[in-house]
Length: 385
Image 1 (tube, helix red, strand yellow):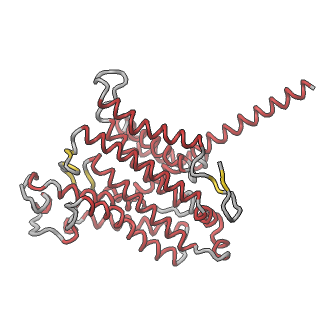
Image 2 (cartoon, helix red, strand yellow; image 1 turned 90 degrees about the vertical axis):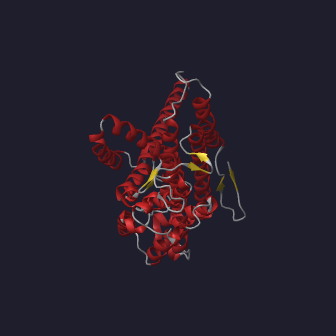
Image 3 (cartoon, one colour; image 1 turned 45 degrees about the horizontal axis):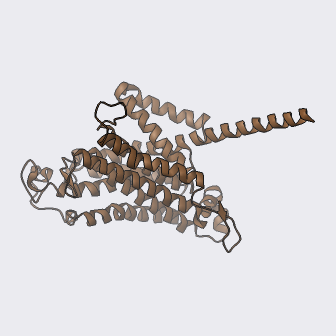
């Protein structure tokens, strides 16, 4: 379905009827079917969903949100950022700080004012940047504001200087590595190597309760759906067409008078904010956030999710995030010693044999099938005459 704006250019609708059907079916399965199969169906039944799968699928949903943010800037704007994991981790730390403040005097040291790791390190008072995180609304704002502010600063400095390609990737990866080293330090006030953990509750609900885990899965699924629609709206807008032009011929777009810096900066900041929200939903489901989330390897893995699913196809980013992480979950349990080799092999295979990812492969097979059907119909028509 399309409509025509005042300028006469065709404009695609947000989703086609078929796309809406798939979108709503996928959301219904995550938001309604899985919770019912977990909470209502009797344990031991063939259709019962085990308790451990609920936070695992919720974690996959947050990874898919992160992959969408990566696809938005890489697949549509040509910005290969290897620091997207940093924005994810910053959002996670903001949520972790809120969860730590909710522990109160239920910690090991029974100190209502300071988290356990601060008491252990002989901190006398709460650092100024921890104030306000005892309120959920403040933490929710910081989840978006902190990654967005960092992306605004880094993006403005790099895009204004017209840094592109591999140099931009190196800068963003260096930023991630610097944050990794900083958060490892005990005197930073973020738990050092151990990070933040031992959470008790969120919004008054016990975080270990299965009903809370189901609620977090539903929140993650809704967040994934909202992220997809936001990204789809951006890429279908006039800005989305500008981003595609920037990706394919940046110098020409600049020559035509468009603000390349402004377009790239906007989408870079939006992607960082979406990554921060994904990190905030991730932390209460896994129960910990530590500096390992800043690992440059984690950001490279995010790019691999998008490449496997299909760069420049938002649905492909979701598919790639689920496929790679399902494989990772299985392999790290069945054969942990070969997981990294599998990851490297997957990167080589996708680069050489599947440049358009899984979605591109399916599209190619569909086109071949249609071509064969057309050829058969033509032969049948020719034989009939």
